[in-house]
Image (cartoon, rainbow, N blue to C red; front, side, top):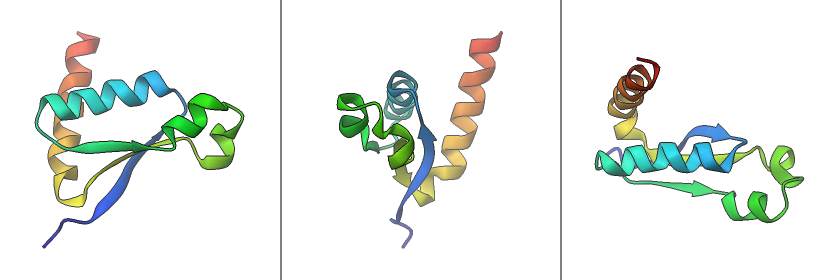
Length: 77
């Protein structure tokens, strides 16, 4: 079973983190952000905490990479 939760990416911008999380949710992939509240309340903690972390299931990473690649192409075009 591959239900391990892993940090997929770290963000230093809360808006970017929430946009990516929204894209994943729209495609049916569960995810959550950690350290978002701490960093939003006190931005000086951003570097100390390593940014806002987007957590996903390890089994979904390959599909998530494809989705975000596709979304990125659509934004650029």
